[in-house]
Amino acid sequence: MGANSRTEGSNLRLRGSISGCAVGLPIFVCFGGAALAFADPTQPSSPTNIFAPASSPAKSIFGLSLFVLAVTGAIFLVVFALLLYSVVSFRKKRNDDGREPPQVYGSNQVELAWTVIPVLIVVALFMATARVIALVQKTSPPGNAIAVTAIGHQFWWEYRYPDLGVVTANELHLPVSDPAYPTPTFITLLSADTDHSFWVPRLGGKTDLIPNHPNTMWIDPQATGVYFGQCAQYCGTQHAKMLLRVYVQTKDEFNQWILQQRQPAFANDAVSQGQRTFETTACINCHTVSGTVANGRFGPDLTHLMSRDTIAAGAAPNTPQNLRLWIRNPDAIKPGSLMPAMQLSDQQLDALTAYLETLR
Image 1 (cartoon, rainbow, N blue to C red):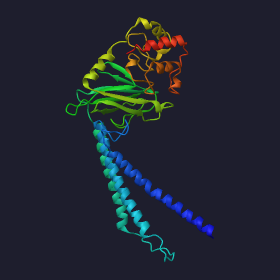
Image 2: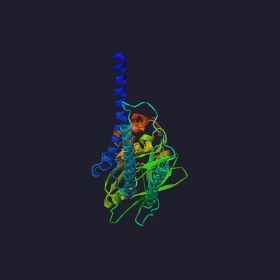
Image 3: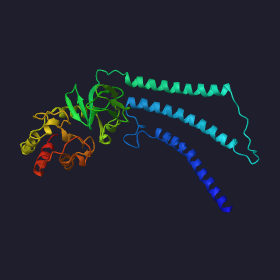
Image 4: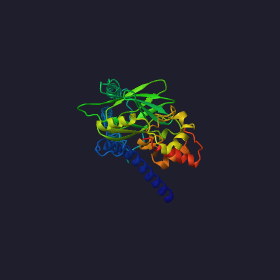
């Protein structure tokens, strides 16, 4: 009997602990989300912090998120309060005879309340969401807008500036948008193969890149710096390493970058052997180097490769060691990438790496 009592007591304590967790977890999530929402935007917890918006579309989405959080938080508090009241008021009493309490049926007031109130809440959330979607999607580009075409590939990003005559890869450069004199960037989103999704949390929401179905989005970054993002649509083996880097620069720095990117590749006789290796292997079938016979379209444009901070769509820093390893064995950096190992000798690898290092 004593053992049974101890076992029953242990079970009661266990159920109490589980109940406490069930009650405490939503409270922790609710208040944790609120703390993040009102965190100091100048000190983001991560470079992809959605609670530190830096452009108009992201700020609109942030405002909508706070509204939804407030509404759902209020619903949670009301439901939790009613649940707590029911648990306390209608718990089993010592003198309870075990009979079922009187049942109430057909209360028009109750049924009307739990029908009308949820409908009004859903309508309010729908209208707020539709307003933000219309604001983001129906904005027309002004005359001074920067036009960019972003093309998703497995597994890298191609960026074209059609009005500026620049093609680059993986690292998007934009001018900062002064609120007094906005310079927004309108991005046309295309896919070369399968579905991708362009998402830089601090600059805007997710927008899909779908084959044969162009999409558009716009951003107006209001602070200089580097903004990080991610392909948010599973697109294959290396989806997780299809990273985004957006460099927001002052207008002078951006104009200087554009001028530098327009220049042809620098010819250097000291690396002629490496250039010859590049032009006589399958490299030229996929890559372009301005001013040479290389005019491929399947891989990133390499004309100014060494002006980029990373290689392999952000998977590794752009250092000579990583570049050599990437050429020798791409799977060592990005397993499942579609770039083939070229099977070059060590001498060819050294020469080719030295040549690519001159492409600034």
